[in-house]
Length: 353
Length: 274
Image (cartoon, each protein chain N blue to C red):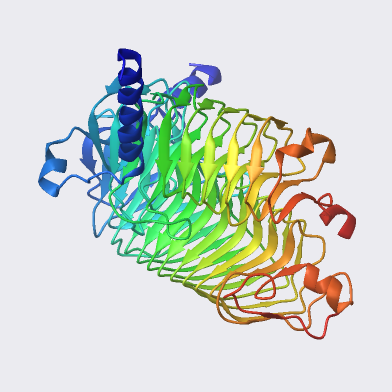
């Protein structure tokens, strides 16, 4: 037997050299720690039970078939994790979670679904696309870095979780990120071209060095939550940042060209400092029963008004730059109790250039 | 009284009675009565036709390629479900009718299609989200009465015909955005926060409408949108027409009797300000 025949036999029979696609059909569970690489097809619901961990190696492609049992247009096949998941790709060899359909669409498959997982789940260098809820974490903590969530019905969703997200892109989803009762750190992120970008209730959000652009309804919307935002670029959304019944600080950010308002504060208490808020259609900032301070912001060049107070209380807006210094001209950029009876005043003293 | 006179009197009485019926608030069904009504909620597939009384008990969405048709005289009672949770396929925490397929509402002047929230609401505290069309397939909304919604009709990349409707007490009457080009003809839009908004490259035809008594704008057009404005009556609003391009105003007599009839905005200044 010459060397070429030996080489051919090795190629054909050496385990791990030839990778057939690994297929999971129906409802299955992994009963031992498992490592995935190559191509994986999920044609059902795969459970990672408590006590078991799944590691997904760089370059792995995980595909899900579409199965819609009740005709609601939402695929149901998914990975359900109660144990641990480590999906850690690399920049050169990311991990792909996608639809197995020839013509994929958002909602083809369910989610990477973590429910009361035992360990902190880790995702890095992953791309999740065409899911119903790309990344879904309930009572489970996670670290997500360098990932893309694209063309899902919802990119990410968590409840009662602590999640750290850095260097991630969430774009072209029906809606981007939603969470409740959670603590979330977002850093170096892009949330772009979703119907709404980020929405949360009863949560604490720290958002730093991020871009929130082109979302069709709201860029960032917090309800009964707390925001610590800094160095954000919030551009071209319908509303930029919308706080409802929330507390927050926003500083050193740019809120530009949002169709309605750069910032909308409704029954909220906020400290807004050193931001550039310009080119927004209806008003730079709209306050409805808002407390707190607006200080050292650049508020020139907005559409109808720089600042509107629709609440009964006074708004403290001392020390902002309005693009002019004349108090009468500044008053023309503000709508408050001087224009509408029963509405509080705006204190625009100490204008800056 | 001759026969002609008697007939005229009869017509007048009928007209007055009809007017009273139209003006008086409808009697809302009891919980037991609601339970017996056909329910609209969840996903609509195929071609579904509604008539008579219907209960919008929860969020409903018309799937792509599906048709929801409302026949003349249909009354839709809307459950006002203010919550915090939004399923991923919806957009609002309020009850919404989300259309990704086709919506055909065939109301008439005598037999309008009415959307009636079951709880009070106002432009500041809407009782429901309203009708959202996103990537919808044409369709028509004719002869409807839509009230106390966050947005009467929100068109995102959708271009239905919106004709001869009454929008009252909504926060936003009609919004056209993201390339929408709805034909907005002969509607009455009143008593909300704002009447019609044109955002992000929309190009609606806004013709022959009455846009009245809004706390803020009658019609707002951003710098990217190119609506046709003709033959409207925009009156009693805080700001009548708000536009970037004065050439879009058409006949300035469209806006009269507002606190400020016309406000021309400066172009978005962010580029210049950078």
